[in-house]
Length: 397
Image 1 (cartoon, rainbow, N blue to C red):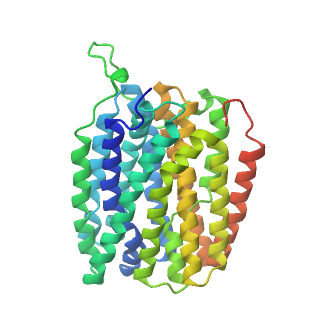
Image 2 (image 1 turned 120 degrees about the vertical axis):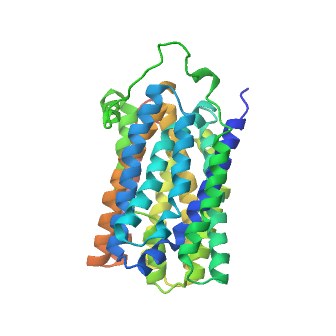
Image 3 (image 1 turned 60 degrees about the horizontal axis):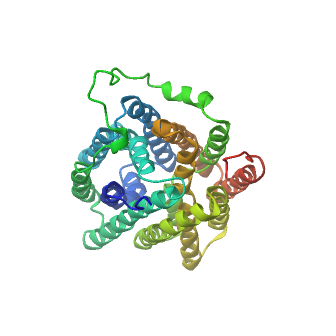
């Protein structure tokens, strides 16, 4: 029986833990920092959307390129290095174009590494254990996402308003993650041949899109459903802005975000175990229904304990969907195409996030936060119905 948690899985878990520690030191204070240097809510939505679109397009291309080259580790190493070095750049200068460039570089790093990293994880598992492996990785990732905001909260308690210093400090856990990537090795069964048959050159930037018509019908139906969800699933920054809008203070706001990440970290592996036993499809649909409850509740909640309950549920939603979706895709794609399959989904999802985040900012600004959250909940309920009744194919469970 294949070992569930191998050396590679542990290393990738530690890499993600330290990377998210760096990222999430900044994420909950990102809207506060951006507002302090002159960004509007609409501007924040556009900034996040553009950054995610850059990550998305590069995820598709570099996922395809890593399959084309039959190499995964160099993409993982370069991607984490770019993300580590880009974070302090946001504090060097506050001009909008500079902030956009730094944020985009961070997301480009994510785009370079994502498909290759997830293909490495999938290669270390079997169809019967893949959801648990991805759940473990998401748990480690999110543990870092809980530690990071806690460090930020402690720092801002001692040095209130020192946002730029916090951006500079975030480079250190990022570099620790890069150090762990240097210990990774290519899977033994996917090592690069040393003979001249190794591919050279590179595919076109949008060549990953050609994978869609060539893929299985089950993959395409899964892809369309996931993208429909992505089109209304705007940046989590809007959840934090909603707390601010309803009068929640900065410290409690960060505390809720830490709580959400702790719930996510603790629930990710059990959710993966549930998906391996119950099935990825019903597990994912359950996550969508929890999402509907959270967004519907955010439009109505007023007291701090109600927000606490909603962030508890939001952690459960993330655990039931994030790693499960990648395990689902990995089960439908051949080993030699996994980075392309995951990268294609992640790429198109990030482009959808550009639309979702920009549109969310516009709806918030033109109508109200309640309209944004209520409309999102209604549409996601329709996506859950799609997965339940439309996507009934062999292998699609």
